[in-house]
Image 1: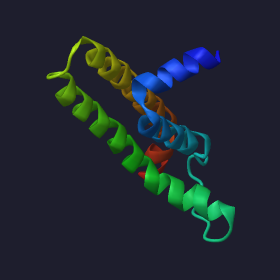
Image 2: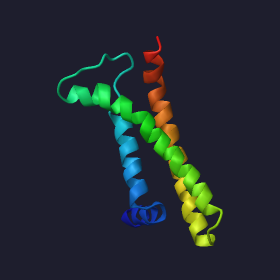
Image 3: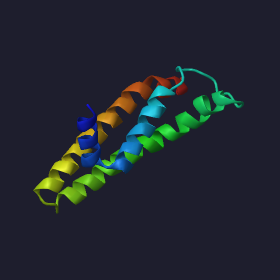
Length: 110
């Protein structure tokens, strides 16, 4: 298990791994749809800061996909494999973020 994790980290890199951890953190900390904003304590982070950071994390994932596509076009075979892994991982995590957060953002419009 540790070998597979380290191989994955080697393919995607530590900075992308930090982006994935941040994305999974905003997924875990998603408040229930329709939750009003709280302005004191940890509830401030959950109801105000995390919903504000979520679109930025999502856009960061998509920006990394674009950059990986650009860099992959002029790379050797080994680097292409690394960029392909990064693209698939970025898109998977971005899809997870969208699927989890859609109910919350829909409730804001009602």
